[in-house]
Image (cartoon, rainbow, N blue to C red; front, side, top):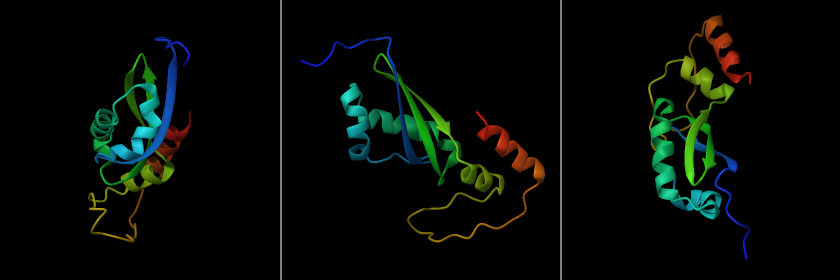
Length: 118
């Protein structure tokens, strides 16, 4: 028999997702299914939370307590720098092997470093 469910226990699940897109429920199911959550609902929550990061791969933190999930975006340094370049969102299925080029101010790099610091 499985252990008794503790409503106050907090679990953290980290996963990589493409910003603004609903990931496949089949890839979320093994991670959130045993915690009693619906993969489809979690996928919609992730897509809503990562709307600002459209087309970029970002790490997502799920904070699960009492079968409720809170989605937080944990951006990587690469995602922050690409976002600082202010490139238009790209269609991942059509545009491949993109070259990022442009100018970034030192303030953008310092802001990215501040976000990365815990």
